[in-house]
Image (cartoon, rainbow, N blue to C red; front, side):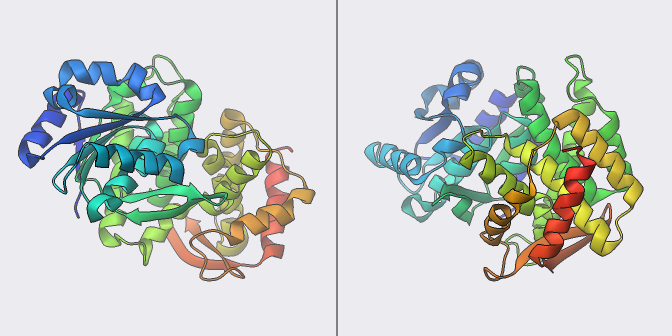
Length: 356
C-alpha cells in the first residue's frame, strides 16, 4: 500500500479531507496522556472528524507499548462495536503510531488508520513505512506487522512545544537517513541547530521532507524488508541493545539517543570492515558526543550487549548478528554478519571516541 504523506500546518483540515474521502463507519482517536493534554484540544477545535470521534487513551512512554495496552485498545474498539469499516486516527509519537497501527492491523483482521505524528521522531521514523508492533518478553518491537497507514500528516506546528530532548531524539533518525543519502545531507544536518529555540521552521520542514523522502524511496522498493529496506536498520542493532540495557539499569534513555550512539558504533564497524572515511567518522562522533552526550559502558557490559544483539529481528539465527553498514554515506551494504569479537573491538573504539 502506498502512503499519502501530507506536509501541512493545517492538520485539522487535512484530517477532515482524508475522512471525507474514506467515509468510515466510525472514527477512533488514539492518544497518549501527553498528546491528549497538549495536542488533542487543538485538533478538536480544527477538525469536525476529531470532535465526533471516540477517544481511546493510553499511558505515555515506551513502557506502555505492550500486550496489556494493546488489549485495552481492542476492548475499547469491541465495546464500541467498531466494524471492519472503522477508522483509527493515531495522534502521538512512535509509541502511539506503533501500537495504534498494530491494533488497526489486527482488529477484525485489519481496519484503516491514519497517523498524525506529534514528535520529530514519529514524523521521520515511526509513522512512515508501515512497521507496527509492541515490545514483548523484554525485547523491543518483538511482535508486530507491516501495516502502512493510508495517510500520514506531517505538521511542524506540533514540534514547537517539544522539549529539546524530544527534538534531538527525532533528529537522530534524520541523521540515519542522512547517512543513507549522501555526505552533503549529513553535513547539512550537522550545521542546522535543532536545539535553537528560534530555529528556522521552514528549513526544518525542508529537512524533514528530505529525510522522509529517503525512507519513502527505500520502502517503495522493499515494502516487507526482504532487501534494501534493511538499510533503515542502520544504527539500530547496537542502538536497540543500548536502549534495552538502559531499561535493565532502570535508567531509560530516549530511543533517538540510543540510535545516535548506535550510529557512531556502526559507523565504526563500517570503517573497520567497509572503508568508511575515518575523518568523517571522527567528525560525526564528536558531534554526537557534544550534542547527545554519551552512553557509558565498560568491557564488563559487552557479553550482555552481545546477547541483546543476538535477539535482533534482522538476524537469520541466534548465532549470527546482522548489520547494515556503509562504504560511504549513500553507499549501503546490507546483511553483513559480524562476529562478537569484532563487535567488541568496535565497542572499544566507541568508548575511545566518546571519551568514556
